[in-house]
Length: 83
Image 1 (cartoon, rainbow, N blue to C red):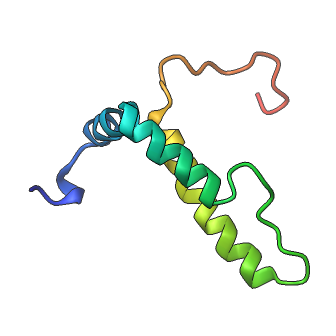
Image 2 (cartoon, rainbow, N blue to C red; image 1 turned 90 degrees about the horizontal axis):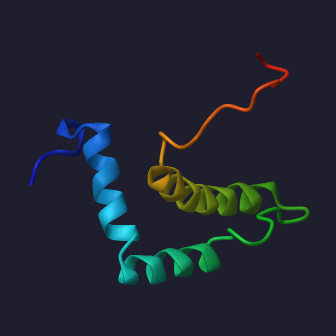
């Protein structure tokens, strides 16, 4: 197995897509979403440390979903105030 820092981003994206677009991968991804606050707020009232911990878990799921996005289909919105 090659070291992770030797793998190009495009190749790594392919690995993510092969895993998480399979039937088994879709089940695992849905489980991760349910277990790690994807569908609900990660804020815990009165406990910023727990909020940060839960947001970190949520970020892992968001990172997986980012790797699965088709970058070529994502187009900037015209008229954006930041342009």
